[in-house]
Length: 78
Image 1 (tube, helix red, strand yellow):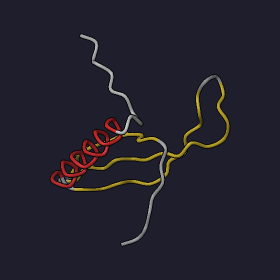
Image 2 (tube, one colour):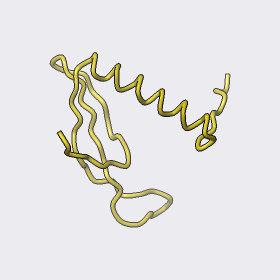
Image 3 (tube, rainbow, N blue to C red):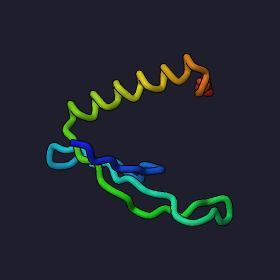
């Protein structure tokens, strides 16, 4: 499969009927009052094992970006 879905922000995530559904949004227009207008984009639907695998891959990606100093980690406030 070669289809790509672009999104700017996840809008919501739910678990129902054995599937994880993540609603994705796209920024539209210019910022107003320090906020951006968001339009619904697409919905990502996967299984629980699929979302756990996705989380692992995203964690690896983030760690790689931290190592390359593209991202920096912040310690959680306790």
